[in-house]
Length: 69
Ligand SMILES: [Zn+2]
Ligand SMILES: [Zn+2]
Image 1 (spheres, helix red, strand yellow):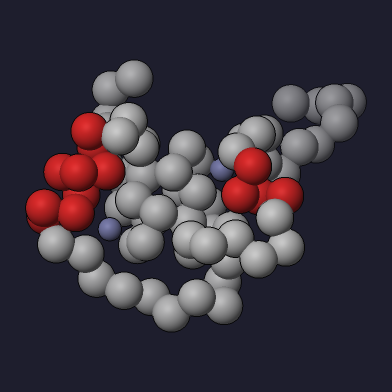
Image 2 (tube, protein in one colour; image 1 turned 60 degrees about the vertical axis):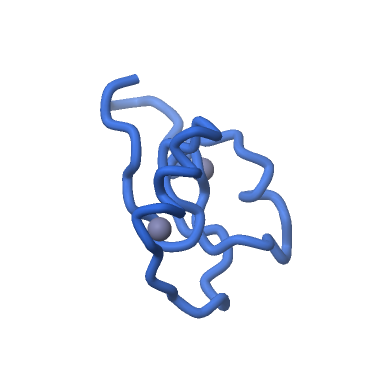
C-alpha cells in the first residue's frame, strides 16, 4: 500500500472516459459515470435482464447484481 502510484479507479470500462455517458453507473465496477442523470428505480425484471448481459452492476441504479465472479 505504500510507495505505489494511487489509482482511484482501475476500471477500464469505456463509460468512464465518455464525457456524456448514456448511463449513470458503470456495469463493471458500479461507479458513477454520469452523475447528471436522474436516479431511477429498477424493476427486478430489469435487473434479471442485466444479469443475463453479464453486467455485474446495474447501470441505472448501481445495485450489485452478480456477487461471485
Ligand atoms: Zn467502472
Ligand atoms: Zn437497477
